[in-house]
Image 1 (cartoon, helix red, strand yellow):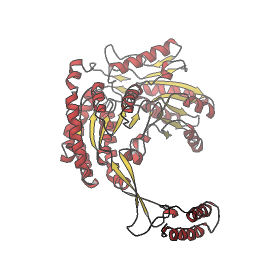
Image 2 (cartoon, rainbow, N blue to C red; image 1 turned 180 degrees about the vertical axis):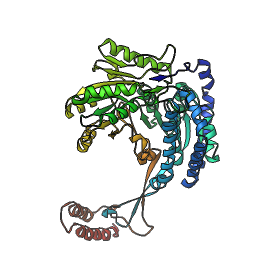
Image 3 (cartoon, rainbow, N blue to C red; image 1 turned 135 degrees about the horizontal axis):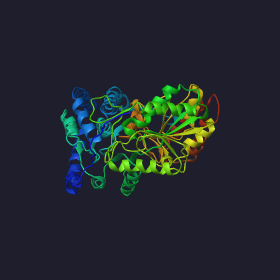
Image 4 (spheres, rainbow, N blue to C red; image 1 turned 90 degrees about the vertical axis):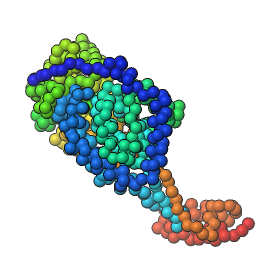
Length: 514
């Protein structure tokens, strides 16, 4: 395994303090955002999509400069930044340009026979000012896709990037490509203190991506103000490998799924279940492939895996490995830093793992690959679901029916079959979890509509008609409505005709004055 390192970086306290947004500034941000939201209500979707077109062009032309910033602050390898950050954003932009108009358009809804002559519609309206709190692991991708989805729906956005990867100046430069976009997105730098101040300003909705621990704090604060919250939290995602797979391909896929972004993804593969018949061969293949990896940061695009971003996440990884080793796990590769005082942890393959170990109980968010045996389909489903998390999973099998059968039984928000983390590659698919992995969805039609509120509208004409259900109530009306219920909800080929005749009698009765 080829390796290279660079000096550890953790933001010093004075740097964080410098970034903290004051309470007064927070209030001003929301006052300005409220005005921006009012302006946006008067704009068209086409006008807002123009900003997305400009951003696509700007990102494409300036991708190397953007990658410089991302890799400097996150320690991603350059290819990781290009593929997982920039390509993901551009795919989402293209999806918005091609799909937002249809998804956000007013919807016609069928009207029941009891409301004959009327029209039903659903309007999808902006929420107002939304708060987006982004994580440090994919600061560009998650931050920008969330902001753009909210903006395209007509919302003003208050954006708090992680204090670990603030990328100060980068987003400002991006939003400068379009005056309306620039006037509609407000960036608040700071720690959790700033986040608390922002929530106190009562945004219309909060979109948070991060740890379950922080998510619970945000929920507790938001609950008191009845602020709706979408949460995308952690995972303990499993790969299930049946014994009929192409071993080489499945091993390469699982390896990437576990180590992309140094394992610092909510949907990283953190548990690998391999069927008995190929277990030894699969482990050997993983071991061989790991030794080929190039670990580096500050590269030109030729490194496979970069470093970890922050010290505290490295501490969790080391603790899990030490615990597993003490309880009998075997470390086949890695198991330590490349050298002292660095944030480069070697890709670590573990076997003889069991549920008593922290690596099986807690989210890792690092480059660990614990591999476990299973015998039957029922057994692996039970093992897979025995966790508090439920974000995503992958199922590998030549038997398509079996793979789909297993996918349907897994308690998670997304499943890739014979691939890994691929649901995230399709902007048309919603992304989100179950259980402690959060709720709500990002991306896709479901995610886009999460940045709107639905308004139900029923349209009638102006006339002299008096509705039968209006006053006065009479014995005859009661009898006719009772007959109408029998006609509508009793199986009969003549039910609609009967209902129409009773309806005519009701209308005639409604014209009578008491």
